[in-house]
Length: 239
Image (cartoon, rainbow, N blue to C red):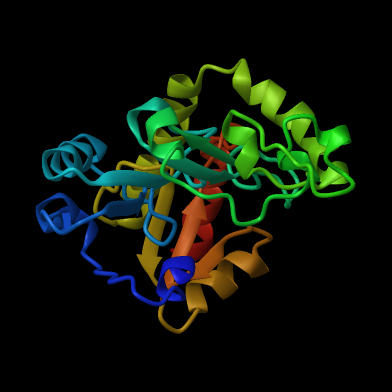
C-alpha cells in the first residue's frame, strides 16, 4: 500500500478481505488486493471483486506474489498484476513481473523509464531521442542480471508444471497440519496460528523447521517438495 499512501491527492480506503467487493463504490478508481494473503494465507474471492469493480468502472491491480507457482492464476482476468518471483516460483530476490491489459496500459505513464524501456534498448542508451516500447516493456526497468539467470531455470520448471496439482498437494498438507494441530481448516497452502509471544516459532526453530512469524501469528507454507513427514514434524514440535 505504501506507494499509494505516499502520493498526495489519493484517497486510500482499506477493507477486510471478506468485505472487499462490497466496499467498491462509484468513487473507486482502483481496487488493489493480493490473490492470496501473505499474513493469513486466505484466498480472495476474485470473481466477486472483479465483478464489483467492473460494475463501478474501477480497475483492478492484483498482487500474485503469494499465488503464482502454487495456486492456479489467470492474470488476464485483471487490469494489472504484479508478482515478485522469490516466493512460490523459487527465483532469486530481485526478479519481479508486471502484466497489464492494453487498455489499462494506455492510461499509465512510465515514471522510471530507462534504456530498457526503449523500443530498441541498445538505441536508447545515449541522448534524448528515446522512443518508448509500444508494448508493456515501456514500464520495465533494467533487469537484475544475475538474479534472472537463476530465475530462468526456476520459472521454466514451474511454467511446465501442473499448478492445480501443486495446489491440491500443498493445500492438502495445510489441511492435515490444521487437523493435527486442532486448528480450524484454512483451505490453503499457508497455515497460520496465533503466536503472539513467538513461542511456537521458537519451538519450530529448535526442531530445525523453517517457519516465520507474521502479524502475531506463526506462519507455515507448504510447497511441492513438502511431505506428510514435514507435517508430522511440525505436529511433534508444537504438541
